[in-house]
Length: 101
Image (cartoon, rainbow, N blue to C red; front, side, top):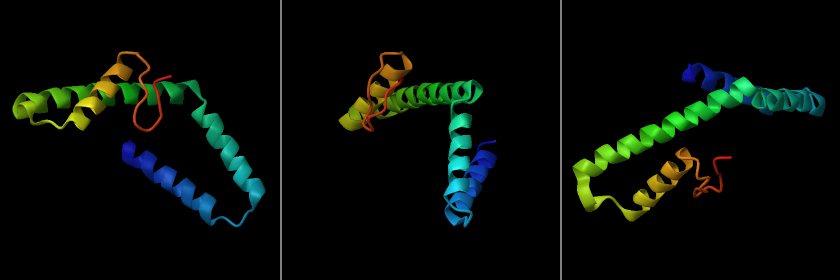
């Protein structure tokens, strides 16, 4: 499913960039994309995927820290803490300026 979504996204992006239909068609596509992004089903799916990835990152970090011990760089430790904080609903802002809102 992920590969199909990536392909469709690339196809749409290529169409927008390569189209000669003009600004009107671009605005139609932009409006459609905004409507899709604001769809509750899409938002719920995106949030559940983000939550799953946060949980997976925490488990992967734990498994690695058990094997590696204290050799994990401090930057990785801080990044994982910010991810854990977001997954627990603390609204911690990450390095890219995004937060779990």
